[in-house]
Structure formats: C-alpha cells, structure tokens
Amino acid sequence: MAFVNENFLKLQKSYLFVEIAKRVEEFQKENPDTEIIRMGIGDVTLPLPQVCIHAMKKAVEEMGDPSTFRGYGPEQGYEFLREKIAKYDFNDRGVDISKDEIFVSDGAKCDTGNFQELFSNDAKVAIPDPVYPVYLDTNVMAGRSGDLVDGRYSNIKYLDCTYENNFIPDLPDEKVDLIYLCFPNNPTGATITKEELKKWIDYARENKAIILYDAAYEAFITDPNIPHSIYEVEGAKEVAVEFRSFSKTAGFTGVRCAYTVVPKKCFAYTKDGEKVSLHELWLRRQSTKFNGVSYIVQRGAEAIYSEEGKRQVKELVDYYLENAKNIKSAMKEAGFICVGGDNSPYVWVKGEMNSWDLFDLILKKCGVVCTPGAGFGRCGEGYIRLSAFNFKENVKKAMDRIKNAKLK
Ligand code: PLP
Image (tube, rainbow, N blue to C red; front, side):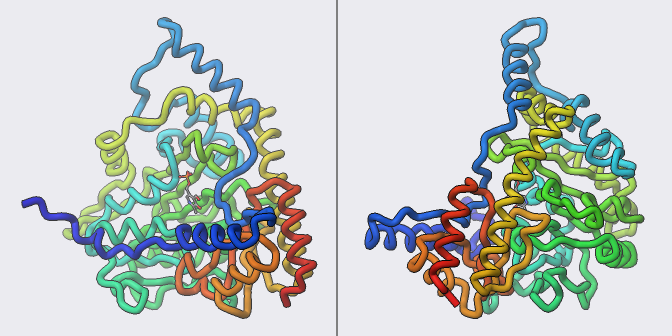
C-alpha cells in the first residue's frame, strides 16, 4: 500500500486568495458598474526591460545555429551570469562573494522552499509572523512543524513582528537551529539596519545556527544606511545563506530567474559534531534535482548588469517606489498608520479593526482590493497589505477613492 507523507495533511488550507476572489466576485455582481482596482497583487505589472528582450532574442538566434547551440548548461548557472552577479551585486558594494558561491536558479520560491532539505528533521526552526508562507509550509511538509494547535504549529518558534518592535523580530528566547529572515519584508515592507542584523549574526554564531536570508526585494532599497545583503555585516558568511531574485528587480516573475548565495565558509554539523559544508551539500542537491535555468533566460538576466540595463531596471523600480510613496501618503492622509513603502513595494496598513473587516470596508466603499494581513499569520491580524505593483493611474484612482470615502 502506498502511504502518503502525512505531514502534507498538516498544512493549513490556503483560503486567502480563494476568499478574496469570492468576496470580489460577489461585490462585482452586486455592483456591475464599479471598476474594481486590485491593490493586493504581489506580481509585477510592467513589461520586461528592453535590454532583456534584446539579449533573449539574440540568445534564441544562437540556439537556432548549430555553431552556437547549447544543451544542458553548467549546474550552478553560466559563468557569464555568475561573474556579473558577484561583481555588481556584491564586490562593487565591498562584499567579498565569489562567482563560485552563487547558484543560479529558476526562483527564490523554490530555493527558499528547498534549502531546508539540507538540515536534520529535528532542527528547531524560527519563522517570522507575519510571513511569506513558503518558509513555514515547506517545513511542515518536511515534518518539522509538530501539530497545529490554535492556529500555530507546536514545534515552530514564531518570531512575532509587531508595531511595538517595528516589525523586526526579537531574538528567540530559546535555542533554535534555523532562522528565516526576509528584508525588505513581504508583507510588512519593514527593513533592517546593519546593527540589528549583527545581533542575529551574533546569535547564529553563538548557537551554531544558520540564517536563511530572503532578499528578494533588495532592489527597492534606496536608503544608503540599509544593507542590501546580509554579507555586508561582519561574520555573516559563516552563518548565512542569501536568496535573491530577478522577479521583482527586473519583471522576471514569468520569465523565472533567481540565485542563492551559499558561501564556502558556511558550515552545519553532523550529530557527531563534524563540520559539513553547506555549499557542497547544496551543489550536490541541486545537481541531483535541478537541471538549470535556460541559456536564453540567463542571457536575459545578464543584460540587466550593463549600463543601459542598470538604467532600465532603476526606471522600473523607481516607478513602483513612486506608487508606494503615493499609497503611503494617501493612506496616512486618510487617517491610517502605515509602515513600509519607502524601501519596499509593500505598504502595511493598521486598521483598528480586523483585517477582513477592513478588506470589506475598502472593497465596498471604494471598489479597491487589498490583501488582509491575517492571511500572512496571527500577527498580521488588524492589518492589510497594499501593493505598489500596479499602473500609476490605477494607484491614483484607488487612493483618491480611499481619501474621499472618509473611512475613518
Ligand atoms: N521571497 C519573497 C519574500 C517573495 O515575496 C517572493 C514572491 O512573491 C519570492 C521570494 C518568490 O520569488 P521568485 O519569483 O523568484 O520565486
């Protein structure tokens, strides 16, 4: 008899987007003339930068010519891309990461989801709340979560991110082995300083823990005091793995390209205390289960590091940041307390009512769709997330409606 992995049965049903769709559909039926504006989307809306289009077209031509055709690529990704990543994303910022420490992949979702496979099943895992759900769900699937009791898994150490701690969690009050951090954060838009990150690195070093640092929204950082990479902080290379993505940086959500940095100095341990290189384990894991990102896509990603590419990417990011600024100032004007939105495409809005009630209020009075914060975890209750991934005109219309509706 084929028994299933019963850990999958412990996963919480994902009602969030289904429930949003249901409520929006009902509202549209009752108000067929209202043009609904969707401000909940976590997907980009602007097309790819032209440099990427040109590079990918050229790569397609190469694939059609026997002298330049390529089959399977190198497991870690083509050197031409890893070299550019190392230089422009790290070395030029004073961070010593080599091209050999970079693993190109088809998404930060897969990488943040898969990396936990390298660790023992009884590793104690610390996960922020509210959170991008992939970290939690993949640990549930792997059997590390324990049972669900009153909406929380018994073996997970939840790191509460609240208004009181500026949405930067406190260090765990017990020993943990794996720590997920995400800055700039989805969903809160919070960022972290080097000083605050240093505390986590010190904790990880003292406890021989590993930090899994998701920097998928790094491109939105404009404040020079905010680190773009965890490796800007001393000591991080021994205890941290960093995930990056071209999805939000360059509109690659549908093209698929990302990378993970696993420094050669980063070690975990066997039960006997023997040091094991995470770099070697991840290489082994990837070369067993993954056959790389297409040549065409890697050429597209490489193009963003040219002078023109950097300019076009900045234009994309600035467009969304301008939206975020407008959302934040309009919501403040409407009387709401907001965080995020300055170095992030997300604005996190405090409601003084529960998340779904605020969702309904904004939908019914303004025809605007947001994402209820409660869908990201217990600490998201009472908040909504507004996304800057939209067209400028839609953002303006939505914010005018919210300001005029006198919701408060
Ligand atoms: N990490 C975070 C925090 C995200 O919000 C997302 C996408 O929404 C991802 C990773 C996924 O990125 P990718 O498109 O590279 O899989």
